[in-house]
Length: 200
Image (cartoon, rainbow, N blue to C red; front, side, top):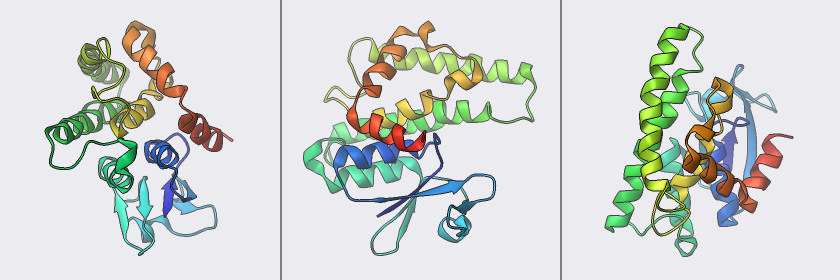
């Protein structure tokens, strides 16, 4: 498998999960501005959407969209329990969290990258985002991870996008449960290994 990634982008989540699973994979770095790989390959030829993550399978099929990639990977190694079994209510709960992180947290933080918005508009985005942080805290104050069964692909995704908060002067210490969550996930060997590569 080949994971197309950009450093510290949302592709960090499947990067972490690949390491959690112990699966063989090749990392291919994308320049988000030029949309080219380090070897000069046109990323649009791999993923016409033009953004990471993209996972190219051994049969040459390409899978995009973080939540889909994360679930696909977890199902390759069900013994790791990074996703509940398909068809169970717990799997639906995982999908609920993946959608929430994707639309409400990733989406909200994503808008803050835009240079088109005034500071007033960004303040409104943050106000809405902070309400979503409260929802996360309601769960993470009573359990270590988003699912009661333990660390899952949803946690890898949430950890990834919450790492962007310092870039927008958002101090997670205002939400101690989120700060503890980030510290807890950050201690996982898979996370340390993925970050060591991406930050090199």
